[in-house]
Amino acid sequence: MERKYIISMLLGILIFWVRPIQAQQLPQFSQYIFNGLHINPGYAGYKNEGYIQTTYRSQWVNFPGAPRTMTLTADLSANEGKMGFGLSYVRDKIGLTESNLGMLTYAYRINTGDRGRLSLGISGGISEYAFDPSDIITVNPDDPTLPASRVAATAPNMNMGLFYHTDRFYAGFSAYNLIGRKALMREDIAVAFHDFHYYLTFGWMVDLTDQVQLKPSVLVKHAKGSPTSYDLNAMFLFKEKIWFGGSYRSNVRVFDDRLQQNLSKRNALALVMEYFISPGLRLGYAYDYNLNALNSSRNESHEISLGVYLSGKREIVYNPRWF
Image: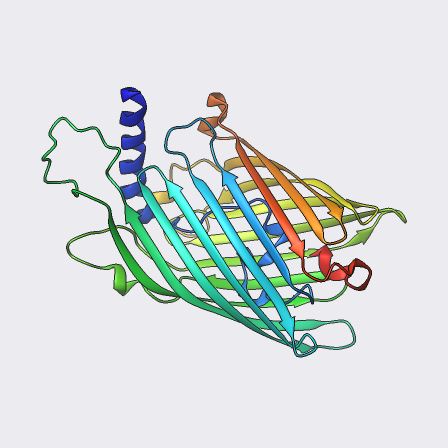
């Protein structure tokens, strides 16, 4: 048991110092494919009905102090689909560090032709970053370099995004952590940095047969001090009821940053599926297999989600559920 606490302590301290430098505050998901609100506030109201989803992700299972992430999102449309409203809560715990994020979202949507729609979304809220040393086993209990109890810092936060879609294609661009960085620059503690994150995504639907459709998609992510990562996704839809497919996640050095020089370009493969239990209820699961140094440790990642449509009138909203 003591060994477990020591490993957890070391991982927590490592993340406490390294993760802020690499600006990876925002958690990673494999099922954003089914809920664009995780990566773009312009997505709010896209489904043209109320939708609530909760997601739980356990990353690097059995690795002490590994990331655990829980989210709850809800969005709806109003004014004949011209406006979207949403809210989200994200709790991300890694080792001895923890972050909590609560946001409210508004999106305004305009028609761009018979089938196209462009949405501009903005979200605002509060971010909290905390460090809790209660599980640390120290040689010197009075070590002055460690806080005596949980320390936390809060900052205002704002995200913005554009989201465009037709009945067969979608594309979006968003920027996160637009404000709040100065609020975390306190002299007594340094819990986290708060840097910009950028997301670019696009995808489309292809009919393979009357019962099978293919949705290829791409997501590109970038944060200061980190390599630019990308996801290549291919999802198959069977009989408008079952989604099944996968993702390949990797990264590339776009900017000349010393922090990126020794990082592996390989990251993970993900197996993703989703099933409509009923017209208004969907269950999703993702399994990530590491292709980096952790693959020999058998520390894979699991992610499960549950989504509820508030109207349950599936026949009216086929296409919006594609994206």
